[in-house]
Image (cartoon, rainbow, N blue to C red):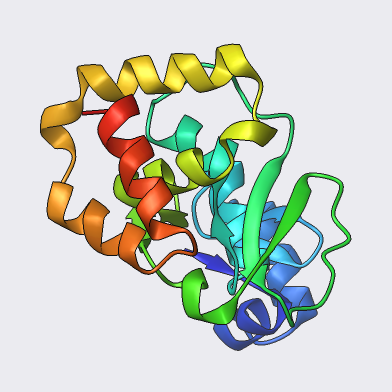
Length: 179
């Protein structure tokens, strides 16, 4: 379980008890202000813990869903337009309209809690950002999606597309590229 310094104080009582728990390996300091009761926590879970209003998106979501084997250079984190700027070199912040931010947002357990867009929302983002992605990378993801077409919830995908700007264009792209 991840916790911040205040949570560690609440669980252990004071700073001395925290240091003692760390020495006894009952508590682990993962990075400044982030503590865990388990020694192994994924970096995605740490990022999601530090920025709880964000959602892993685009290349981070594609990698999470095993649509590509290209490890992202940074975590792409979608946040609301009015969210404060994230000053973490591991994170690339993507500002989203508040009404679209929660569409497809899902929580997974992967060595800690990870908030990421589900497969269908990741497909919508792939289509929306097609021109901003390297061509080979885009084609690799499309190829992998075609192999996993049975896993895609088409109704959910159509529902997500209907909420996006230029929905008709996205629907046409989805039919031509994936199905």
